[in-house]
Length: 417
Image (cartoon, rainbow, N blue to C red; front, side, top):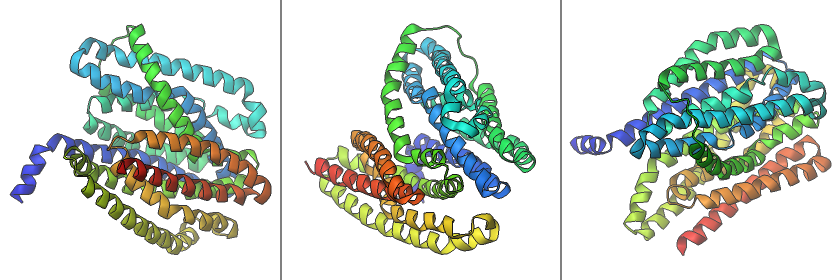
């Protein structure tokens, strides 16, 4: 016990920050997931599918409003906190200027040309236009707090936002159906931004060309990676909705949301063990690292299979009991195919966060995500033409498993050198 306490005290800041970051992530994602489940419960399958489609489109647009600016801000906030407090006071305003500028451009283009792409669903996206500003601003605050290592406050902000907004969110969805579901998203982010504003404190309104330029230049690289990630993971919902497979869009959105939330556990486990692997790398104990990579790969794959089997067994009775409107053959056609992506994805979540990123091989992730994004779009188009909506699900399983296996092989080859 004393040994454990001694180790904790030696790494108290890192451990505490990790705990608070975990609380914050689970609280924020838990709240968005709760909104999602309320939508699934109160909306009929067609309206729920439309909700998933419009939300996926807006998240795509939000990505251009941020385009890596929040990540770049986190980097420079950490740097300026060390050696330039004056620039630190100015970094938020300059990053905010970029976010608001990008958001305004995206909003104007959406208003002008959105009807051409969204057709009869165009008016729905207008209810989510505030998210083009609110979501990037909340990410910007998140980046600043991360850079300053104010993880405890981030957790408090997420918890407070959830508590203050849950009642209104429930009221909106229960009484105003699809419109209420869309407005509830903007409301939650509005509460998040307001609370973040009060926690952050004073900042300078002075524009600094150098800060804006530095943030913008760095954000481009991150933004391109995020764009690739969207095409790799989220474009399926957009393509399903655009192809007018509305109900199937809802099924797929529900399945992927459950799956992505579950993967957080494996990602956090990777974060927990990552410092040990970095230590082995610094000590040049490469044989130990290779053994750990093999061990983690094997057991992660076994856990992934077990996880898929558990979902196979428990999801049908859960759907029948709590979401009976989705308890039919079309939903399970999507669900059973998607189970095939789980084992390899569990391995990827563990290795990417436990080995590839902390050991300095993040370029492998960026490269494979960009390639995977392009391949996913191409396969979606081809498979959709030949197999209908199930073609997109099949394409996702094929591309994700192929890219993840390629990622592992490439990492192992480079690491062995």
